[in-house]
Length: 97
Image (cartoon, rainbow, N blue to C red):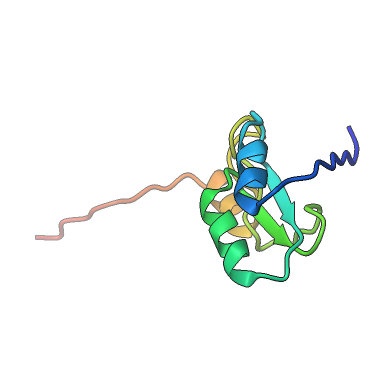
């Protein structure tokens, strides 16, 4: 396992998103563009758990949700998701009447 990159020429961001969505994996994606509107459109249509704009998709800080998209892992990582994964919720009702 290691960093892998595939570069393919595309005619549009829509074509690039479609090619990326053809994969059975979708952990994270990276998009290099100067057009912020195109980046938001890509985020809506791209089947990935996270999208990095103008950076490689290896950056992550603990409070960012990570993982669990398509066949890329099970569940999510990150502070909130880790707490939910390691917590069993219980409740108790006491009627003092």
